[in-house]
Length: 386
Image (cartoon, rainbow, N blue to C red):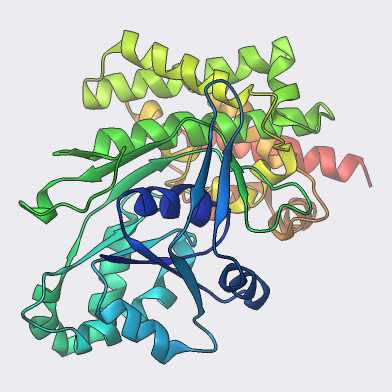
């Protein structure tokens, strides 16, 4: 069995690739980073180090890498004969992944089992997005190619922090992971992924993860940055920050319970587990890594505005989520392109118009007035600091 994974970075090697290896797949990583590709091909194994309670080391073998920019034909050939394709590249890159998959489907033996495609991204419906890109790329040919692939959405969760210097292609991760996959598209032949669980309705799992893990992680980062704290674990050691993060997650849990019928007590236990994970002092994670790309994280269907908008529509509390939005607006990291852009736009643009553009909220939406006020307040702070 063969699996082609797009994105040979830390998540690709330390989470998705690890589980595919454990499922018996020959691993082919695809990436455009020449140095990383060369390092992978120069090694016969790498180790995934789990740090924290119950952590173990796992040696991964049976892999190779392709530079998709330099050898597109080689990549297409690998996909054409693969059993599984996965991604961990970021939702905005999926349109580039679509092209070699379409070319590979053209070459795939029509009698072969369908290629099993899963986009493992921090986004709702990422595989659907990839499929749409593939269909658009295939055009009129899609009617012929459609039976050669199946597509399943997934929800993935594992903290993979920035890696220590000199670690080579080894990866440090937390012990906890979750990989939920839609059962239906695979019929009687699901991929063999140890530790993954297949579910009939993925939506609650995706939103529980996005609105708890992603919302909580980013809230911790932005509040920590405001307080001048470097590490995520140290931010949660601050009682005031921990209380504010817990309050934000209580609001997202209230939405999840109302929307999906999830049990409030189980959600409370899930929140506690998430906060313990963030507080793991063995993870060398920083507020700057977790907080990067604030413009994306403030967009309409992301971790703050997404749940807050639905909660506001239902008359649920959003006060703690608005505090998190304010902290995100204050995230000022000269090394992060989106942070620099956001702070510049707060200095130069009308706050209400900027709020509407960044968050995608319409003026009549019940969440818009307090969000507009948060943008206005931050704009005033930025102007006052000049």
